[in-house]
Length: 336
Image 1 (cartoon, helix red, strand yellow):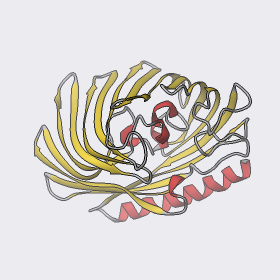
Image 2 (cartoon, rainbow, N blue to C red; image 1 turned 120 degrees about the vertical axis):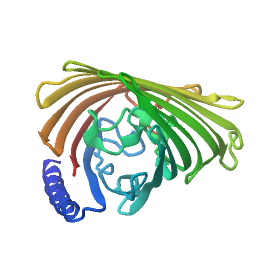
Image 3 (cartoon, rainbow, N blue to C red; image 1 turned 30 degrees about the vertical axis):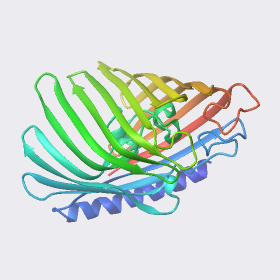
Image 4 (cartoon, one colour; image 1 turned 90 degrees about the vertical axis):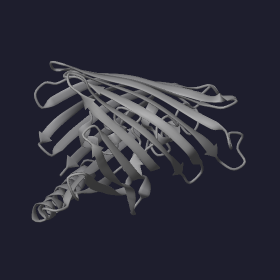
């Protein structure tokens, strides 16, 4: 494991350095990116989050390349290509959109855009930007069905404020997935930012299209609420998300977490409690103790010990033989 981590770190530094040189040589198009090296292993052979078991898992390793350009004082474009992770060895178009500033406090966007309903959904792939090895799976794991990564559509953005700055995003569109499609999507998110706090509310409704399943053609609703507080060296984050499917109460679920962290120079230890519960009877609680270490301006290292307690399988492929499963998570994250 240690040798693989060393090889990955060396390769990532070389790629980041080369790409940064391209950015310096090109003044019109701005190029940024990230690289995530992630390893997880659990105490059971029952797969967790579809991938992780007692053999260890590196499949979450990925990279992203972001390109943006300011075409004039009102019009800008941005796009991102991603490789690795769920995409395997393929680099794919992750998102891309154009943005036109109608006025100082209003903009319109169209294309494939990031979902804005949760606290870290705008930058969920960029591991460097948050404390955890992976965002709390009770909300951010794809199969938790409480958040999205991106959607095709259009949005109107309103911005303003003074002591309390606000951003309101109103959007419409669709998501076409491998197993299910979400049509007629309408949603909004509200972000409030003060000197020491951040609050976010979101609501989203769409029509599910999945052949042969009882939810086909029914409305799905997701509501979210989150808060983040920076108090001297303390950081507190908490978030709640719930969904419901029209006429099918057994498909409803919710997820929640709270994180407490304390910054000590370049080192930040943290503690997270999570819960995910489905009306069908599956549920899971977990506790995570972790530490994030700032290695350089562009690199962080993370290590976590996690204990999960599933019921009726929780977020595992099946109910493990032991009632409590221990996991080790480690990551090295780069930005450039």
